[in-house]
Image (cartoon, rainbow, N blue to C red; front, side, top):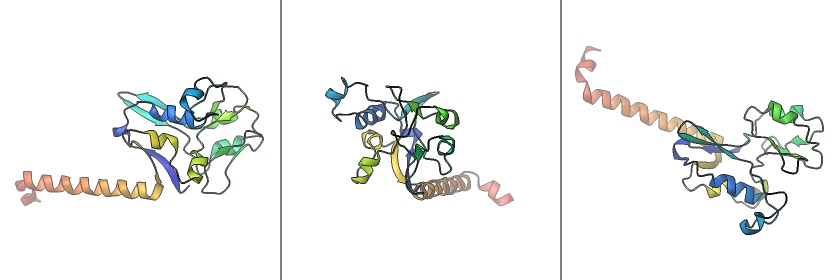
Length: 182
C-alpha cells in the first residue's frame, strides 16, 4: 500500500483524541453533540493500548497479504486495488468473526449492533476529499502520521545514520587514545 498510518510512540500522550475523532468520523451525524445520542453509539476503529508507561495507538495495518481477506467466507473483506486499504463491505459481512481470529493486531471488532465487523478504513471518504484520516488530523502531538511507507523508511535510515555519525564523533572526541591504538 502506498500510504499508511505510522505512529511515533515517543510523541503519543495516550490522550485518546484519535479514538474520539475516529468514532465521530464514523458516526451518522458527524457532530459530537448529536453523535452522543445516536443508536448504536459511534464506535472507534483505533484503540490506544497501554504498554508500560507508553500508549500505543493500534488500528488496521492494511496488510499486503491480509489474512482477514483470505479467511472471509463471503468475500466481504477486500481491496479495490493493490494500493487500496483493506475494506469491509457491510452488505456482504455476516459477522462470523473469522477475521478477528486471524488478525495479528487484534484490531477488528464486532459492531455495536452486533451485525457486522468493523475496522479502520483509513477514512477512505476523507482521503478521497484530500483530507487526512480523522485520527491523524486530531492527534495534538503529531504522533500519528499518514505517510508513504518509503518516506517513513528513508526517514528512519537518515535518523540511524545521524545517530551513528554522532556516536562516532562523540567517541573520537572523548577517547583519542583509543583511536591511536586502533
